[in-house]
Length: 80
Image 1 (cartoon, rainbow, N blue to C red):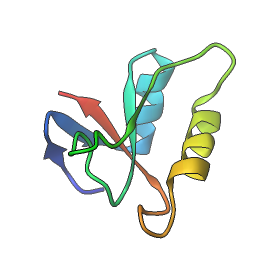
Image 2 (image 1 turned 30 degrees about the vertical axis):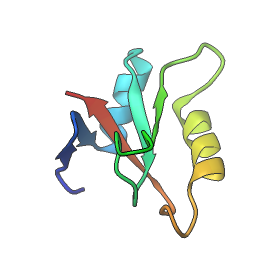
Image 3 (image 1 turned 135 degrees about the horizontal axis):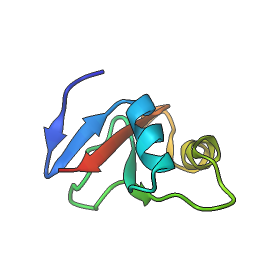
Image 4 (image 1 turned 180 degrees about the vertical axis):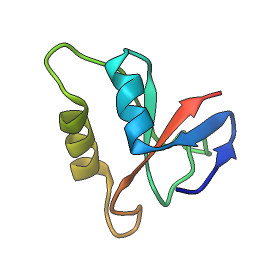
């Protein structure tokens, strides 16, 4: 994983993002080719819900937001 800090967000691994999600902290999901906090405020802040798992949230996000132009997987960020 690349060590990226941009516009107040720090990139974290999927394992770290899952752990933070499980503890109730917000995690920013962003397609890998896009920059969080950019001109159009790209990304989606996800917090834990009672009836949803991290994998369910991730699958839904990737289905609707990841493509050949944005990247086929998700990068995870936290607010610094």
